Amino acid sequence: NYLKMAVLLRRLGLFQPSSGYCPLCLLPWRSYSGDAALGPVLSGDLVVWYDQMVEAGTIQEDKHQRRVVWSLQKLQRKLKGYKHREPSLLQKFLSRGRGSGSRVKGLYMWGSVGSGKTMLMDRFYELVEVEKKRRMHFNEFMQQVHTRVHEFKLSLPRVKASERSSVHDPIPPVAKSITDETHLLCFDEFQVTDIADAMILRRLFTHLFEKGLVVVATSNRPPEELYKNGLQRSNFIPFIPILKNHCLVLPLDSGIDYRKIGLQPRDDLYLWPNTVESNRQLDTLFSTMASEKGLKVKSKTLNFLGRKLRVSKTAGRIAMFSFTELCEKPLSSADYLQIAENFDVVFIKDISQLSFNQRGAARRLISLIDTLYDNQVCLVCSAEVDQEDLFQGIQLTSKDIEDNQILMDDLGIAEGSDESAASIFTGEEEIFASQRAVSRLTEMQTEVYWNSCYSI
Figure 1: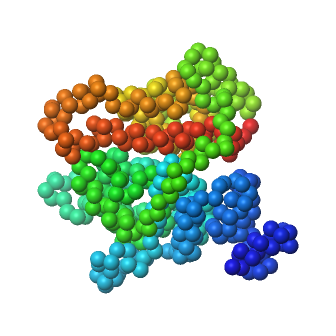
Figure 2: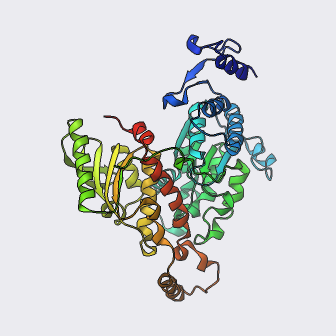
Figure 3: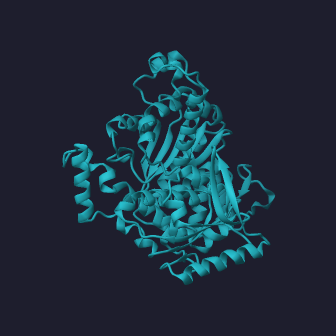
């Protein structure tokens, strides 16, 4: 109530925060360090920030978002100064069968693309007062987990498989190393598409939650639909109740893609169709940006995890690639993360419209867009078709269905069985994820996005 009264006084012109403190509750005022349009907000108050955003016309009032904002603010207050402690054996015994017990419960918000999930989580992450906190894309997190598992295995003496004991299990020490570094983990785009991820999530997060890790996550799917129609999904299903026991699950689905409302895309950032002229425009823009910063054009090699990724054309933190180089070769999210960390602007030439038989390239393009967007990297590209049609080709054709039937026969999979509904045969996961990619591509072409991540 004090906070609301302070905001009311300010709106009436009876108080200005130039003194730095609210006259009613003596809380410090704080200016948002990002987009100036967000304006000053009361320190730590997520609800007041949302009210001001709505009043300023920066966002629209959305009852689904408001519900999530209130839940995030409650969690924020519970987490103030939070440091997890691993429970004693007695505490573990007493809390058996009671979910997360007295632990702080995280939050899992899910909904359609462009509904504001990432915006709310980012604001929560900025305001929450937890010393050891991390915010990252889920794919990036799992990539780091697999790297730690690999490093742990390399550190062990070689023994026969029959002689291995629990001491050689990499999951407990990997979980401990994560929780030693992090008490609050914020995931953007919690999604499970990789069978290697699916097989270790239950054991990994059982250990993480037992050690007191708090998770806040966004996703396009409710927990029950994670890894939907994935191979060996029966081994993944036990993870779902574990996640729900430790996270409050909230839908954020107004059915509106706010990225496509009120933001006009620039006409020089996504050029189609692919022509000699469109690629010439990309070359010209690349040269202009390099010359404005006085940068020399040269090739560069990125070295990471014992690998090398050659970039044939760079100028400082600007890079040029072809679609073939990035999406038709066996690159992974780790490669895309290196690109995002090393470059502020990425040019991509000749993006193809993707067919069902190019699902590998589609997955890579989706992962690339997610990584660039998550790291606020600007994208300039030429493509065969308009962005809305980029992934239309991954819908099944009669020829694809016939080829799938041959493959299922070869694998001994009966038509109509659970295995026949796997995403490898339907392309459902790629179709679902492509909606998010198109939405993000739309936002990445706007002046607001461009100005937030690049300046001359």
